[in-house]
Length: 178
Image 1 (cartoon, rainbow, N blue to C red):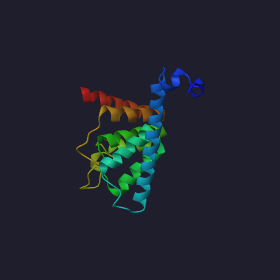
Image 2 (cartoon, rainbow, N blue to C red; image 1 turned 90 degrees about the vertical axis):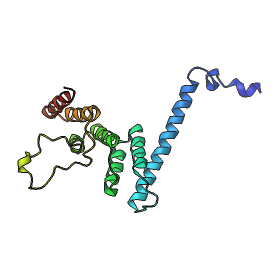
Image 3 (cartoon, one colour; image 1 turned 180 degrees about the vertical axis):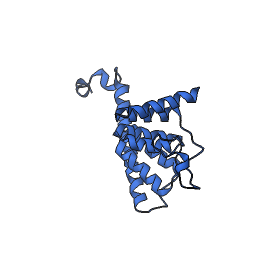
């Protein structure tokens, strides 16, 4: 009917930008639904519900939802819950968590996660000072730092005013290519 169409513009149905508007709305629904799933998963885990707290792939998807929604503190909490449950990290998990700490302005935590990749810290004691028989703590020795891991932790150090540490990491990154 003509009266119903009178108040609509061509853009409302199929004009320029209509697909973009629909895409933005779909993304909003996607992220909102994803974050509800993240909240429910963390709550179930904290209640000790092992039956409904699923595998590493599911937890990684929760981290990705948090990252896509730019929910940095929530990402940190999801990762803490993963650690508590013994869910193993992989390269993507490390990337997401280091990046979240960079966004939160927590360079110390970003460095701690980065060092789990087997990259030594300038502040770590020399190998001879470690307790006899102890090994450096690395969560996944088969996972190695990538340029993405380095870049995120370098940015975190730079933002925190840790220029010397950022330069050390940059030099280590350059040596990887060498």
